[in-house]
Image 1: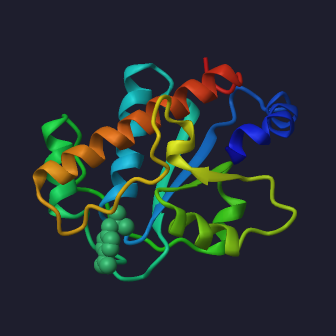
Image 2: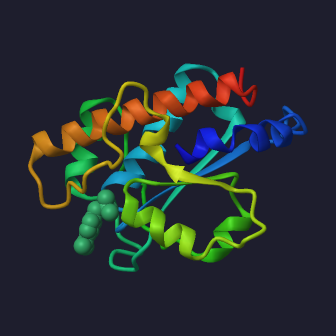
Length: 180
Ligand code: 4NP
């Protein structure tokens, strides 16, 4: 659990954070059409329900350029709609090293994504890097599986897994005093 291991350092930093400065989070997958757009939308949706949306800036990106400029995968759009979330405005973008200057958290959906993120992380960077599911409680899995090409049940499982991660991430932000 790299994130918890960094707890001391993180709380030193967060004590300095002003309540008016948003926490900036980026989710990263391979294509930025299936998993990370769902993570972005689900976290914002949960934050809206809890009244903390103004505290967060949430974006997503893909490690590849395969789908840059495209909308979210129809499987993700459909399952999001089923849960009351509109993903139709999403446009895929590629993760780039300067993202380390734009975010406080950069979280991969799986270990391959995280490897790509860490490969370009500046040694002096204090951005929190890890996996979304590092934050999920009672979840043995580390990776959100790639649902690309899968059926609706696959996308629904992925949605629910991402939701558990986002719930855990919000709980982490609350217990570390970053949101109320
Ligand atoms: P994502 O899913 O990384 O969750 O957006 C994928 C989308 C596209 C591809 C692989 C995974 N692809 O190989 O094109």
